[in-house]
Image (cartoon, rainbow, N blue to C red; front, side, top):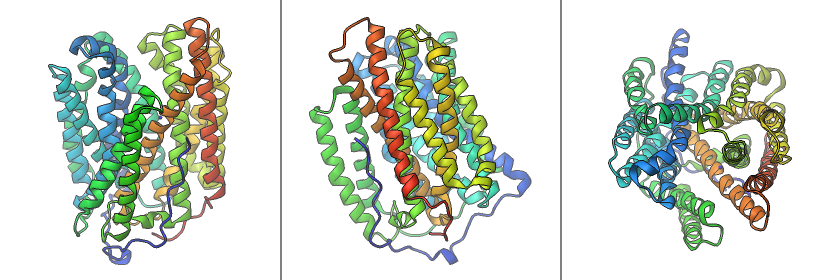
Length: 490
């Protein structure tokens, strides 16, 4: 889910292809219809959120059914992670150029088709190819959903309420995925963890043209060189961190991936600086609040999402939970987060963005630090419930203000790119965080003796402590850079 650096600020913004003053904007839906529009958009995003975890609890059945090796099984997750994380920037810009509803509809159909192919897969190769296609579909869905909220809901209370619902979907989707995956695997087959997306995707493809207005297509040449260097560079970076989480920081393929990513991403920035219509407009970093928000959105999931991995291990291997019960253990956190997010617009109106965000990130760090005191004899009520409730409260207070800060005053032509970068950094942060915490866990348990449960708990506690420190590091840009003020459109 090393501390990443703050995104760079260019010395000068890249040249836009059109003036913001003359740029068309999407025709907003009538207020009475905005609720239906939001429901369709967040359902598409929820489908992606559920899929991020629904397959996890089905992995043992998938291994037996398709005869995966122990190392090959991890690529059921990694194939999706690589495609999704590597293509998010590209997916955001495709929506800017071709229309976001059109891009979202294409992504939903591709996601449904790939889920069908995966659910019917006859061997491991077919399943891995389908999972990579799912990642591509998700990379078209995720930035388009957020960009449609940015352009379709007027800035202010309505957009804040829409973002509050949207921000809760990631946590809700992850928890629902764990529970749904356990139910489907126990009652039917692992194949239904994938096939369940097919009817949902088809229903969304029918609903999108009816309830979601299309955004204007922006003219101009597509930045092919930027798309190539950015996509391959980001994919190399995600791959390198996946290798680290599996084999450690000395792995030769991981080091080669990091080197390739460094070269390609430097080339990407140089290309974007000169491009007329870049995949990633560097002018997005000219706004101080947005730049600080991007730094925090990278570090917050880096500290938090890796911790959830060890909580799942503790629940199943120490407390003896079934996969379904382990998924249900996260529901109190999800409920608190969902409830809190719905209250955040009122808190923002009363206290402002910065105090709410700093409070949320502090509570998230405190809850994760509390988990560092975990002992093998602790049960759910004594060891997990309190920290989970605190983490849910902290995340509920954090993600929506960060989303609002980053997307505030973004021009319609850059909404997809801004959303794509937000989700790329969030996804990359989770991948980086998992790699770092797995390394901390491995170091802590290498020479530890005792029962398997005691060894796992000791290593997990050290990983939780590292996660709390990373989350605290995310406070620095939020405290030092964010002003909490909204500036002009940039």
